Image (cartoon, rainbow, N blue to C red; front, side):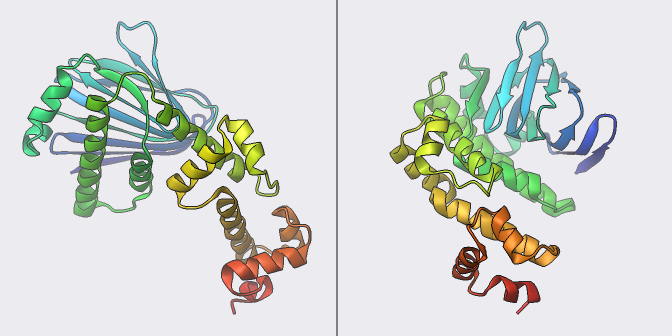
Length: 290
């Protein structure tokens, strides 16, 4: 396996780009905070399939001879069949970018006996498609971005995750209409709800407030949020507050009343009660390592 790691530095921004190539497969992972637009040119001289997944940020895919780029936003993916293809990938700087691109040729398909399945895909007219990622896809993308392994273990890990993603993408492509479904839109709104909670832990938004801001009814929001993240909205916010409290208690010198205030509690007593209920011990004991 060939692996190449780049560090992104000023004036472009800060971050890392990692590329792994083996057995007809290439995986490119990018995590960066950009100071300005970042461009990456891509050219192939043989037929390949390309999948792209955005976890955070926005990617524009400019294809040669096409007037308008494909716009891929957070929690979206795209897929294309490329033949003697040239393209420019344009990463926007408005927010940090996290995502990955996967390309594979017929050698990879032959090795995994996938020619028939992808032959079926290639005979459709849907050679390019932007779609909302499923919950499972998002979990796999986060695993791939975070995984620290190298060498043989990395190769085995990447190949297994790529095959999972291919299964999900192929199933979606061959069974879904070209337009985003209502479920696709719900997925994006549920993630927008989580972002609202995480953005300001000191502000306890009510479920009706969150539902209005993301454009979902309360019942759908509560049901789909728990399905996606395994917790209700209130529980998720509470978990995040406790995680942040633990971090500050261990690494900082803020008094407990200041931590309570920063996390939106009325006073230190309310915070202490919530913290003990969550962890089993008081904040002061947690800070002392008891």
